[in-house]
Image (cartoon, rainbow, N blue to C red; front, side, top):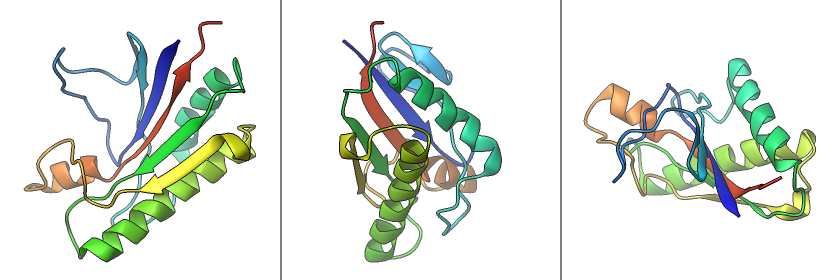
Length: 142
């Protein structure tokens, strides 16, 4: 069984890992895409619902899988506020998945605040990329 991951950030994000940068879309066993959030906000940008719709389409090939939604923030602000905001973002994306057909009993949403940045928070661009939500579930082989 393969994995599907949806990463939601404020900008198009190239993922760097041990195998090199990854473009949004399916890469091997993983799937990456982006969703926009404003600073201190939990509203999903209208244009980003296309990426959520694509994730749901893949999920619906095997709707028995468990979906994990993880929210993150940049390092601006205090840790407690960031934790609350990251949870709101994760909940917002989880609700969007549910509305589109993902069984709410199969979704777990958790906020992690500024933990696990994917790039440095030293620039506005880096902070924007760290404001993200990741969705992970097994990529159906069907």
